[in-house]
Each structure stands twice: as structure tokens, then as C-alpha cells.
Amino acid sequence: MKEDRPSVSLEMESSPETLTLVRGALGGLAEGLNLDPELLDDIKTAVSEACNNVVMHAYGEGSGPLSVALYVGPDTIEVLVRDQGSGIALLTPSDDRLQGVGIPIIRALAHQTAFRPVPSGGTEVWMEFQGRRDGELLYREPTQAAVEDGWGQRLEGDAVVSLSPVSFIGGVLGRLARALAARARFSLDRFSDVYLVTDALAAHAMQAASSSRIAFGIATGPRHLELTLGPLRSGGSGELMTDSSNDVVAALRLLTDELEVRTENGAEALHLVMRDQRDRS
Image (cartoon, rainbow, N blue to C red; front, top):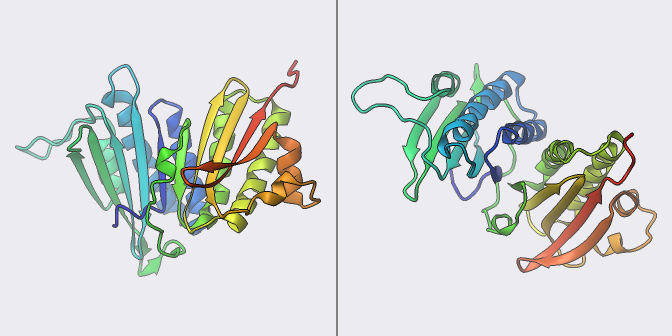
């Protein structure tokens, strides 16, 4: 595992709702990998248990940062779950008894695990899953993930995601945006618009990304969703500001309340806002 080359990294604030985001991101990545359903279930369950331990134990009755990073290798899939709090209880040094809710499940489902303190504070849970069964690879191996460039780390929102290769964005962006739109209490009609917007945005990212890594941040408020995506190549989003008949352009221009090209962190980014102002009665 090269820690600077995650296939997907997800940064968020710990809360019970974050488990939905984590499982959504894993489901979107599995779609891009054509991942074996049984292996996906094992990964989802183990990672959810690790994240739930953060939610339940790392910050007492409060919340704090929670990060999940997944690395796809030629024979294994590795996942790191980190917090900056008190973390989960670790193994005792004197015996093999387990402490902490969910740890037995994690160890049963993952091929290898490690529970260790983070030098700067918090806990890291490492899980490795076997990618082969009877000699057959259980997923479509992607191209090597690009180095994490730090661009996504400076974005803000309820969820900040970095992906490589860019082809993973379709499944991951759609699932997370819909989960957050539901949290923001979008009406059914406006929720349907989120499907169309994220599909169009993913298609645009595939054409306009400036490298093989892309990041996005999604922030929400009551009936409000704000999304920033990049880095995009210079001039790659100019068509979105025109009255082009292109389906992607039409969806983004007609279904968003605000749409603009920005310079974010030294690169071009697309920023959009969706509001739900429709009468739900």
C-alpha cells in the first residue's frame, strides 16, 4: 500500500449519518471495480463497524474528524479508518482478548487487521481483504491511482472526497450527493434533479479533469446543497457558461440555482448550488 495513492479517500465529521456516506462511497467504488458482491459485503460490514466505533467512542458525546481511505492493489484491497479522538479500545498487551464493540467482526471479515495509535492523536484501523478466490481476481484492477496532490484536502463540506482514476466519480458522486440531499430534506421532485445533475457533472469531469485524480466537496443546509469539483483543465468548463444544446450543459444550467467556474487552490473548479424552494404540501 502506498499511502499517498488512495483509490478513494473520504473526509467527514463523525455522526450516525456518516455511515450512510461511507457505505455509499464503497458501493460507488465497487460499481467502478465490478467488485465481487460477497467481498463488497465483507468490506462494507468491516469498515462500517470501524467507523461506528469512531462515532460511538472516539469523541465522547461529541463529534470530530473521521477519514476513510481505500487502496486497490493487484491482489488485495486495504482500508484505513482514522480518527483524532480517544479512538477505540485496543488489544490488551497480555493476551488475545478483544475490547471494543465491532472489533471481533472486523477481525473475522478482514484477512489481516491492525489497531494502532496515531502519533498526532487518535486511532488508526487498518484492514486488508484478499482480492482473490480460488486464484481468480474478484474485481477489475484499475490503473494505478495518482498521488494525492493535496487539492481535495483544502476543500470543505459535509463530505470531501478524492478519487483516482477519475472513472470512479460516476458511482461515488451520485451516491453521496443523494445521501446528503436526503439529509437536507429535498422534496421528491428536487431529489430527482440531483440524479440528473450528478450524472451530468460526472460526465463533464470525465472530459474536463486536468489529471487522473479528482476531488469534490459537498456542503448542505436545510433544503440546500453546494458542491465544488476539481481540478479541471483550464478552459475545460467554458462551454457550461454558454447556451449550448449539449445535454450535459443543459442539465447543469437548467437544474442548478448557481453555476460558476472558479479558481480553487491554483486550479479551475466547478461550483454549483441546488436549492429546494418547491412547495412540498
